[in-house]
Length: 84
Image (cartoon, rainbow, N blue to C red):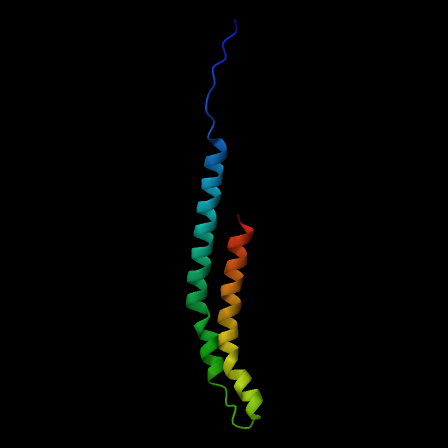
């Protein structure tokens, strides 16, 4: 009778863990860079003189910073979902 020695292989689990760490570190580094760099253009956008603009254009200009932050959030969500 031939006996086979069964060994457990956790190579797949290790690769998944390494990939998860890479994703978490990448997202955190990108989020830190975004948190540092995004307020600079938002500050300059909010300093624009919109007194000669129509009220609708001025209101949309005020919402631009919110749209930028929302776009960055959605970008990070997309990166996290794709990396699974």
